[in-house]
Length: 373
Image 1 (cartoon, helix red, strand yellow):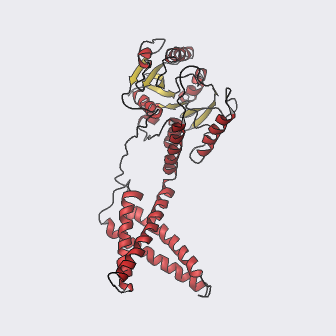
Image 2 (cartoon, one colour; image 1 turned 135 degrees about the vertical axis):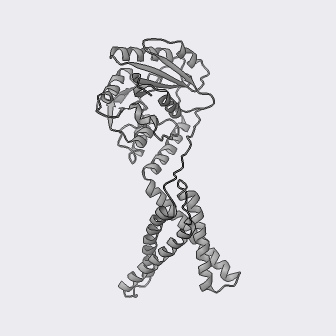
Image 3 (cartoon, one colour; image 1 turned 90 degrees about the vertical axis):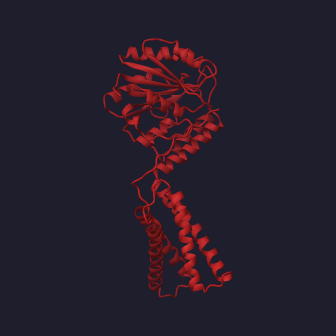
C-alpha cells in the first residue's frame, strides 16, 4: 500500500458519543496547523450510544473513516484493525476521551518522519510529564504496572496508551495482545528505535471510564505472555524440566508395577520403566514444550537415544564427582546425582530441541479477541 498521508490517527472507541465529534475536530486542527497531511480512523466496537454515526457525520479538515466491529471487543485488537486500514506513513494511537494531550501529536510524529526513531511513546514519568489530580492509590498502581514490565521493556510508562509508530513496522508484525496494552505489545514484539515524549495525562471529563478489575487482570495475563515471548528459551527449558519431573513419577510407578505386579526382575523392570518414562516425556514435550514446532521423522527414536545419552552423562558426572571425593563423603551421592541431572537436562533439552524437533515448520497462532466489559 502506498503512503497517501503522513499521519493516520487511530481512535478505538466504545460509547464515546460525547467526545468523538470534538476530538475529531481538534485533531484535524492540530494536523492542519502543523502542515501534516493526515486521516483519522475511528474503529468502533459497535457502540450503543451512536458513536460511529456521529463520527461519520464529522468532516473537519482531514478525511475521517469509521469502521464498526460487530461481535468483538477490545482496545488492542481495535488498534490492530486500525493499523490494517491505515494509509499514513506514521500511525498515531490515542484514546478518544481527551486523556492524551492532542497538542503533543506533532512531537510524537516528527521524530519518526525525520528518521530519528521508529516509535514514540507518550510518558507521564519522564521530565516534563505528569498526571492531573491522580489519587495516591492510582499512582501506585500505575507505577507498579510499569515496574512489573521492566523485564521486557525499558519504557518508563508502558501503560500510557499514547504512541506513534512507523506503519511499515506493524503491517506484518506478529502482534497477539491481551486486553488493552497495545503500546507494550508493540514495543516488545517489534523492538523499534524508541523515544519517549513527555505528556501530562488528564482523566476523562465526559463518558464512562473503561478501567476496571478485568483490565488489570488482563494486563497481568499480557505481561505473562510477553515474558514468555522475551525469555522463550528459558521458559521452554523450564517446561522441559517440569516434564522431566513428571517422567520421574512415571518411571517410579512403572518400576513398581513391573516388579510387584508383573513380577519382573528389577534389573529388567528398570529398562521397561525407562521406556515408559521416555515415551511419556516425548509425548508431553511434543504437545507442550515444543508444540510450536513439528517433530522430525523418527523423532521418537532420536528422543529415546538422546535420553539414553543423557542418562549416561548423569551417571558419568556422578562417577567423576564421587571419585574426586574419594567415595567417602557420606551422602555426597545425592548432590552428585543432582549435578548430573542438571547437566543431563541441559544436554537433553538442547538435543531434543535441535534434533528431535524441527524449527522449519513453525505454526502460526491465531489472534485472541478479548472481550471488554
